[in-house]
Image (cartoon, rainbow, N blue to C red; front, side, top):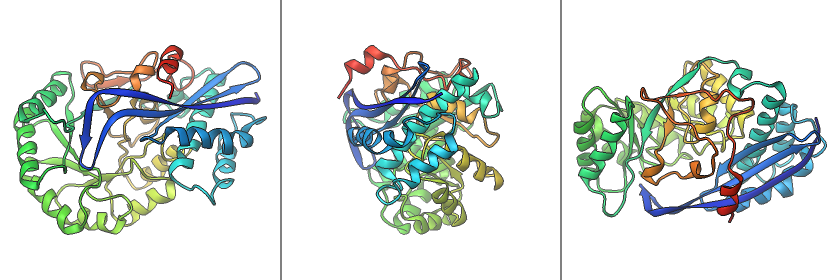
Length: 368
C-alpha cells in the first residue's frame, strides 16, 4: 500500500437558529474533512470540528502534512504520527496543526482497518459489542425557558438514556441553580446528571461557589469549570467540591493529559480523537489513564468514538446529540450515522474500517 493523494477541505453545516453555551453563540458548525487515498484504490477519511477555523485545518493538512505522508505505507501509523508531529513541532504542538494531524491519522487507521478486513474496534482489541451513551444538550436559546429545558431532558430519558448532560454558566449562579433544579426534578433521582460549564468561571472562588450551589442536585461531574489552560486552578476546584471535575475536549497530546491527572485537575478525562492527535494519540491517552484507573468519557463525535470506547476497558460513556435538537449537525454528511438503541447503548459498526462513511452529495452541498 502506498499513499498517492491527500485531500482536505472545509464544510459548513448551518443551524436553524443560533445556539449558545456559557461563553459563545454559534450559527453553524464547520468541519475539516480529510481523505487519504492509496495506489490500490483504497480510501480513508478523517475529520475535525473547526469552530470557524476548518479552512485553516484543511490548509495545514495539504500544505504541511501531505508532503510527509505521500509515498508512505498508511499502515505505519506510529512512525507517520511521529513524523507529522515532530516535523511541525515548532509551529503547532496543539490547536490547528494537531487537529490537522488528527484528521490524517484517523484516515490512516481507516485504511489500516480496511486493509486488515476488520472493524476498527476489533483491530484495536474488541472489548465490547456496544457502549452506553448519554443524551447531551441543555444549551441556551432565546426562547428556551425551564419548560422547554424540562421537555428536552425528558426526551433523553424517554429515549432510554440513564445519563443526561446540560450546559451551565451563562446566567447568574442563582438562575443556573434554578435550571439545574428543574432538570433534576424532571429526570428524577435515579438519572445521572452531568454539568458542562465550558471554562466560564474566572477563578477558583467563582467556580467553587457555583459548583457548591449545584451540589444539592447530585451532579455526577462538572465539565470544564475553568479554562483548561488554568490547570492549577482546575485542580483547586476539583479538590474543593464533593463531585469530580471532567475535562479534556480541547486538550492536546498524552503529555497534557498526564499533567491533568498528575496535578489532580481532573478525575475523568475527555479526549477528543479529532483534537488530541488522532487515533494513535487517543489510544496512548486511554492506556495511560487505564494505568491509574481513570475513566475515559470522550467529547462529541460518537460515530468514531464508539469504536474507540469499544476497544478499551476504562471507557465510561459516549456523548450523543440528537440531530433534531439542532446543536451538532455532522450527521447531515454521514451516510449511515450511529444512534443509540432503546437502552441508550450504541452498537459497534461491523464493516471494515472505522465505520464512518461520508455522503459525497452532502459534502458537496455544504462545501465552504
